[in-house]
Image (cartoon, rainbow, N blue to C red; front, side):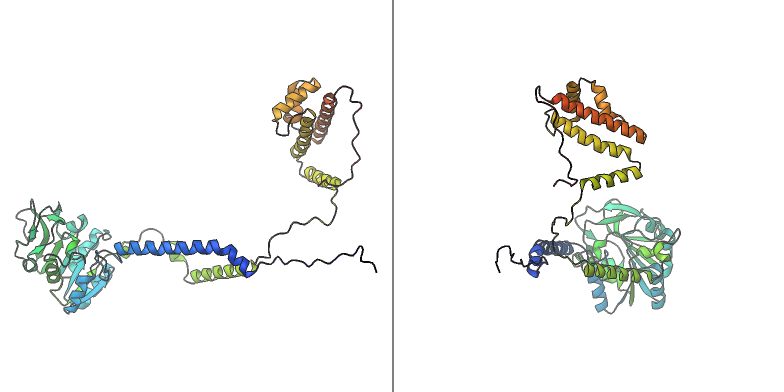
Length: 418
């Protein structure tokens, strides 16, 4: 049997991606992800080293602005420190202790005037750090703001026992103003113009101590001057210290309940479960089957079929403008070629060239090729005939003299040209 005409079978090449190919394509994203992770870690370390690990003067905050140092020293001396976040918790803690010192630092101003007035009733000893205007009005109406101290040193110069033991505190902080002769008030660590760093108000059996600056209790300043002595003597006078830093929970809720408050507790876990199931299904069913392969169609698509199918769509949707535009685009391209113009020639240039060749007004040529809008099927057919007649006139006028009759077009094969 002759081997002529036989064809060697070709082994198909698998287009399924291999593990090595997948890893090669993923190198960039892996490197980018690792780089982004390293940048995030470095940024976190840099910002965490200089920032705070909690609220200012937080009992468990070891950052420079925290209050963990004085709290730990008080605990070592046998004082029970109870950190609380809300006014109700502060009231419960002081009531349970019976005799407790209440430490308050409302840095963000969460407490209202009515809530601040309650502080005086919670404990017989209240220490307020960096009080704002509302706190001064509620607890010590005669005291005002004194600005920032410019003194090089601050000495006690008062009979307050805790201040006498401290002798000095770190200078340069905030101060409070106290009018001369104000009854019931004692000012310590005086500055300029009747300003003081510590003011104590005694009424009956209750004592309210106002400390103007937070540096006295902060970790980075507690070991300087007599700050530690002042803080320990103010806060360690009794066996229990309630360390109260107000939070958003103290802000009264107004208005209608939020969507989160109305949503049942099981909604969030169910949503998270659905998201997880969706992602898993996407990964499971989203496998890649390799790159797309361009192949020739196994059948012959006749140009007449394409034309008839598009015509039916245009007729069904009454898209006369789309249909006539398709006719115009082909006619303009052929007339430009007949007039010797490049394919990139603008439409105005084609209109002028066709008008010159056919000796017709440019306005009429423009109306046929662009301007007229068919309002009915009959108008569209008439406009189509006008376009065809203009194309024939252009081809006839563009023929060189003596070129003979116009060649007839070859019969259509009924197939789309490649």
